[in-house]
Length: 220
Ligand code: C5P
Image (cartoon, rainbow, N blue to C red):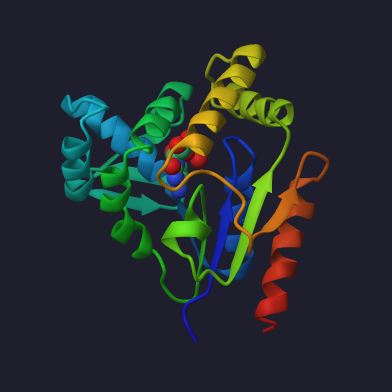
C-alpha cells in the first residue's frame, strides 16, 4: 500500500495549517506546510536580489535552495528564518512567485520528498490536485473572508506584529483572487475533495472531521 497522504487545501488564513499540524500529531505522521516553501523561496529571492518576476532565475534559485524543516521552523542555509516569512509582505511575495509555472515545477520534487512512512499531512493550494493527486484523503478547508481575517489578525498580534483588520480583509481578498485566477495550479475545490467549512467550527471539530474521513478510508 502506498504511504498515506492527507492533503488539505484552501484559501489564505483558513486555519488549514493549524488543523493539518494537529491531524499529523494525532496520527504520528509527518507534516508539510507547503506555503512555507513558497514563502521562504520569495524570502531567499529578496535577500539574493533575484527579481520576483524573473521566472527562470526563481526556478534556478528554488532548485538550489538549502532548506530544512524541523516542526514548524524552517532553516535556510542552516539558519532558522523564524517569523520573517510569516509577515503579510512575505505572503504577498509568495503569492506573486507562486503564479509562475517554472517555479512551481522546480518545487515539485522537493514537496513529494516529504511523503515518507508512516504518512504525511500537508496543506497548501494544490496538494490534492497537483503535488499528491493520489492522496488518501483530500480536503478543501475554508471559512468566510471576514472570519479568516479575524484568525490572521489574532495570529499576527500573537506574534507581536502590527495588524489592521480592514487591511487584512482587503489583502486576503486580493490574494485569494490571484491564487484562484492563475493558470497554473489555481486554488479551487477538486471534485474528489471533501468540503470543510470551518466558519462555525472549533479547531477540535475540524480536526475530528478530517480524522473521521481518514478512518473511513484506512480503518486501522
Ligand atoms: O498558505 P500560505 O499563506 O503560507 O501560502 C503563501 C502563498 O503561497 C499563497 O498565497 C499561495 O499563493 C502560495 N502557495 C501555493 N501553493 C501551495 C502553497 C502556497 O501557490 N501549495
